[in-house]
Image 1 (cartoon, rainbow, N blue to C red):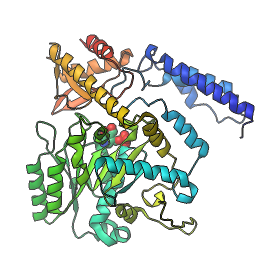
Image 2: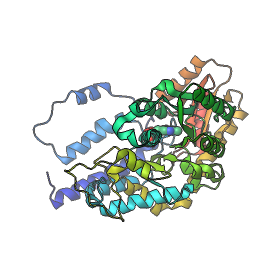
Image 3: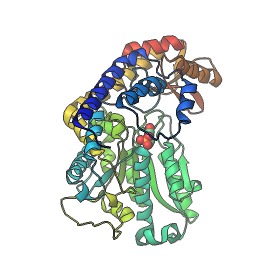
Image 4: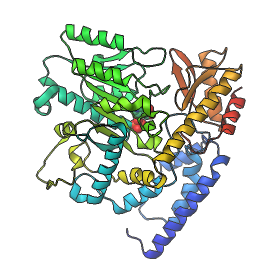
Length: 461
Ligand SMILES: Cc1ncc(COP(=O)(O)O)c(C=O)c1O
């Protein structure tokens, strides 16, 4: 299972050819493929091979079955979710990371990778203005980041007995507050953590899709009066549908007053602090107890790359440290055993693509790209407002546009979305905004232009 030098050269050649051909072919491909179901069924029922096949035949199969049946997420008109086209460098970083195959659990299995992960965590903590006590860990994505943050929040509320007694340590149910615009990963985390979704309060939002502070304060008071224990607010820096940012500074004040943990789900929007256009709205991230962010969104890293930061890194240690006898951990002040900061033991060297992306392109380039994505959304919003066939479902405040076919019912809007996706011309997502159904374009694609926006609107019209 090792290659000769000649095989390495051949693999590199095939890989380079594939990468070049694939990226060049993107504009000519349907965004969503015309699926070859018989080929996929044959693939699923293939028996386990007893004997190997050549490298050439693997790449041939890739071109014939995998590529034509893949959703082309880097296509200029792939705009459905908060899902970017990867920057050109990050697949190479993944190749290097896999070649080095560092296990980023214990520092002595990955000393340089450990320093790299610490560096990017510090960059992010500094970007948000978190104090020197802050720490964190890179994760598979925002969902895992939210789960880790809420684990730390729960265990902080439960205190010293959190690990030994779990929720049984609590004298009354713990209650978590969020908004009705929050991402479903918060709901999932609440059930995984055994808190029970009936103790998750989805507080209504205002006309700007931001959590209503008055209703939040009322809910906290009502829960306290009923003997329950409010312990955490999970708010958004970029709600998943419209990109709204909750009033973080006011929330921090309220949380301080009620001694609640403030978690900010910034998987979508926190990294827009790289741009001076968005930074002022995000300066209060400095007040949060924990923040999730996703380098596989606005750093345009290939999947997977998420991150969670906590204001005081000891909270992660409290929730996740483990010292089994079969793992020799020699503590060293220069390094962190990341196995003690999250649920995973074996961990890939994800930090390399994050580090390289920022080092190669630079933070200033990211600021420009984030603003360009916002400009594209503003352009689409203007076109929609100028055309009688469409109406906006929400003002454009970030890089996404929620709209609908004017005068058509919800079903017609759903049908239009399906037809657009089935046609292969473009891939938009569904929007459900204050009870109305429409379509959503989220600009996170480095290849999209205004001409793509025009093409999409013309087809829908
Ligand atoms: C606001 C928000 N939170 C959490 C997530 C989940 O992130 P991931 O898909 O990286 O797990 C997303 C994904 O789009 C999101 O937009």
